[in-house]
Image (cartoon, rainbow, N blue to C red):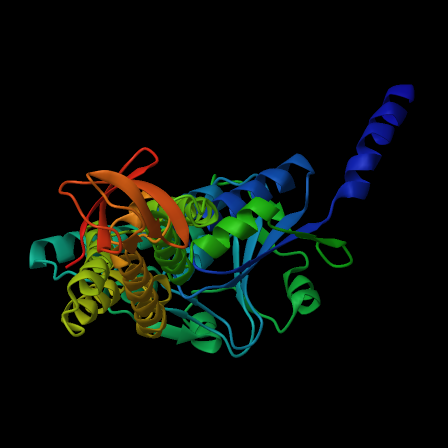
Amino acid sequence: MRRLLVVLILTLPLAARASVLRVDVNDMIHPISDEFIGRALADAAKTHDDAVVIELRTPGGLIDSTRSIVEKIMTSRVPVIVYVAPTGSRAASAGFFILESADVAAMAPGTNTGAAHPVILGEKMDEIMKTKMENDAAAFMRTIATRRGRNVAVAESAVRESKSFTEDEALNQKLIDVIAPDLPSLFRALEGKRVRRYDGTTTTLHLVGKPVRTYDMSLKERLLSMLMDPNIAFLLFALGSLAIFAEFNHPGAVVPGVVGVISILLALFALNLLPTRYASLSLLLLAFVLFALEAKYATHGVLGIGGVICMIFGALFLVDGPIPEMRVHLLTALVVSVPIGLIAIFLTTLVLRARRVRVSTGREGMIGEIGIARTQLGPAGKVFVHGELWNARARTSLPEGTRVRVSGVDGLQLIVEAAE
């Protein structure tokens, strides 16, 4: 009896802590999404939650990150429900793989999923490579659908034929398990449902009335997720390059150099995780070279326009994303490239003009100045220059009152010659 009491006391805290963990994924699928979902599933296992609900809204993303997320969902010790919500949302491309991998796949009214054909932007694949990629993705989908007891043929058609499905079509064709407008309705629909896990075991869901706690991204994940937007990464790289360009033109300013280095490092960190075409970076660097040459040689805008064009094309081809949301938009490329080109040319022009201006102070400032001989220079004497009386020496004897020009400075003595 005492042993039973001890067991009850030890299990009561676990039962009290049991809840449903809600994870909101409203972003492209990339390494940060993978890290966030993996961390949430680990936390749910640690706290013995009854289930994890991933509310999914995504246009798609990277296949490597998708595979990693699918693996984490399938091996999760806690049942995973992927719920495409709210109304108007979608789980396209990579999102379809994640939806089908769940223990329970659910959608809200007015949502859609599918269109999971693999894509590589910016290059034309030969037929063999295209077939390889398609077959690989199709086999991946067949594995998921088979293990989850879903309609394999229809699921595969979303990969091979890029088919998309509304929530009703997905339910009728056994791609999902339930349609529900919100979480309480979803829990009621799943109450008492027996779920077959990926490892062959079964579990019964009892989620009605259970507390729902939301699992949020860490500050680091939120910042990195923002950086994973190719438009933000390009903007940071372009502004960082402009700041370093300004530092080279105005040595010692310090602030532009520090800001530029930090911006470029952040951009390179994001680009390292994205499918980046590093050859495009050479176009961006070439743009600044052309801006500098335009300011130096004044080609009436030819080199400047060439620099802007290099920056625009460099931006458009910078990230080889599989979906439009993972590419630099044309509007972003135009809005960033044109002003930066004008600013870079303006800064370089100011520097070159400043370097052409003759020095007017110090020893160099005296060279070429005109004065009057106040005594006979034979060859040494006194001259009046810049409102001051100077010791001077001439190469030839010059009479008093002669206009002289300063040709050199030797310590505190001026070297002069006849101005005429």
